[in-house]
Amino acid sequence: MKNKVISHGGQSRGEYLTFAKQLALKSGDIMLKYFQVGLESKVKNDKSIVSVADEEINQLVIDEVSKEYPDFSVFGEEGSVHKKSNFVWVCDPLDGTVPFVKGLPVSVFSLALVEDGKPIVGVVYDPFTKRLYCGTLGGGATLNDSSIIVSNKILDRQATIDSEWYPNTKFDFDPACHELSFKTGVYVLHIGSTINAACMVASGQLEAMIFDGSEGKNVDIAAVKVIVEEAGGKVTDLFGNEQRYDQAIKGAIVSNGIVHDQLINLVEV
Image 1 (tube, rainbow, N blue to C red):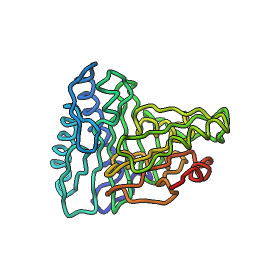
Image 2 (image 1 turned 90 degrees about the vertical axis):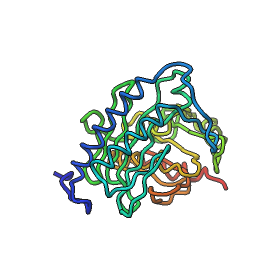
Image 3 (image 1 turned 60 degrees about the vertical axis):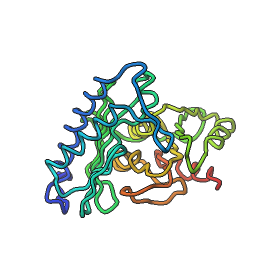
Image 4 (image 1 turned 45 degrees about the vertical axis):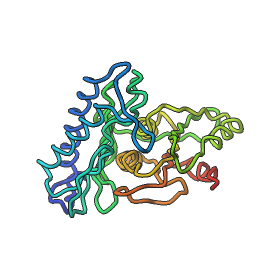
């Protein structure tokens, strides 16, 4: 019943979630259609790359939101529509474009509804494993309709974290992560998809994910924020602060909550 809470947009969060889930599945079909080794891509000004799949999915999101919620804004990694609204659909059409064009099946689709800077609905879809993560503010988090919860591990030899870095990142904490590994035995992964790794924190497979971040990368964390925290975890910027998700962010620490402060202490500016 929690999903029946009415937002100012006039619909329940459950209705927004249904829309987002349907759009995620359509986007996953597009990802699979283009998935092949050597898919052509372009380098953007921020040194990241974009493929035709990214662009087609981003346009699909804009088109579908414009039909269903014409007064809402869309903030997409490959294109946006700005309206005078407190609501914005924040989308990363294909997180993990580099592995995608290399034929590595780790990429995901992400969509969040953000109200006044705060994510209230989040959906992430991995079409390769058919894993659909969902979260609604106050309504819990699920993986394929089953409730999920973060792990209760500390940072020791039994723990695994993920660190994601970009060429133009404003912050670089990979060396600190590797030093942590030497000291504690924690295993550090670099999956190649920030959002995929963060969702693995929500499902209890990883203890944390550190995203060094770069300008405009709210698209990477908006859906993750509500999914992970509804699963019992914690999501902040790299310095332990809350942040808005309708604008640029200062990276992110995504954790099971238990290890959060320890990871923040790694940060040195």
